[in-house]
Length: 476
Image: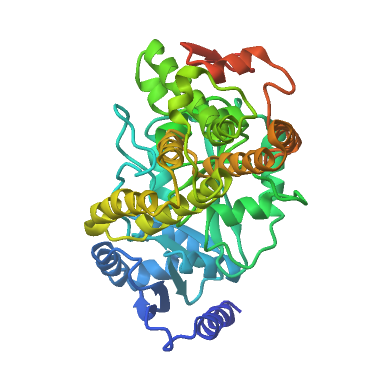
């Protein structure tokens, strides 16, 4: 019966893996202590030196000792001291393990197969993320390998309560998705909701990664302007998030961590706020909030003042055009919104060696030509340049575009109905913001709605110490 099981495993994997058709799927037939054995692996995922050493150990097993081994667990105990190994009977789990880079060994006479971890993944260095640079903080960042990312977190949080739960998403991609939390600090209700959402995903593939997962977990029937989760590629940000009793989701093949639950006020925080003294950190946060408000209201307010809907102080009249212009100010602002986004996309896809040239062409030649030709006036170009620079103070790209859409809506209202149109657009934005729920269904405006001053002041101001709701004191 055991021999039939051995043949069943071998026939199954030969048929499923299409041995001989895919060049990187390997099958090796060897004799271990006089017994027939097969090895299945993905070429390139195995460490060749360790594989060579393991083969020496396996081929050196004496026949008399092999005859004494009753099952796969006993074989692991006596003959596989240098590798992490487990036994498995489920062929689907065997297949997933092998395609994940593990070595699968089937030995005649054993009803279970042996799975050994001898893998190595191609990985880039843990460099600092380009979008989340810090002046004085750590210079490491997540990579595309899940195990490396969990190690970067454990290096900072040496607590046995730190747990990483592994889930599999996608019937084709079979992507590893990990939920990280600190047991005893994390809210059990939130954790249960996240587990149910991930286990309930019925999606064929998750190759795109974090955004595909978030969209699959979201059950909202309408599209929101605002991001429902916070993304980061910095391990120190994730660790701070975890010690606050929140959760992190890591996706294999993605260097971006998903932080949940989040609210709108989480996005005004930045890493440098906590790497500098309290006064300096609060100054950085104040500038970030001020820039956010400027990005929302600068062009609509300028349009209302230039059109005479809002009175202008005499000392500010120099900043407004005193001559006619070819296109209405609203059209100029609207076209510049697209032009700046187009330049951003162009710079994103421009080789590094040509990036400086693109900046010179875009900022000087095109801008000067646009003014000289009469399409735009210098004031509108200056306003949009200030907005473009101020937008970079917001580390979240998703929230940056949400703010942009808010500004455009207010600009349209101001152009059509003046002050009342702008106020109506502001009201619409506030209603959308209040109606938005985060990924677990809680208020996006918490701790403002429902009001919690203790939590709100820690988000608005850089404080020395924060107290967790379970009683634990958490430093900055």
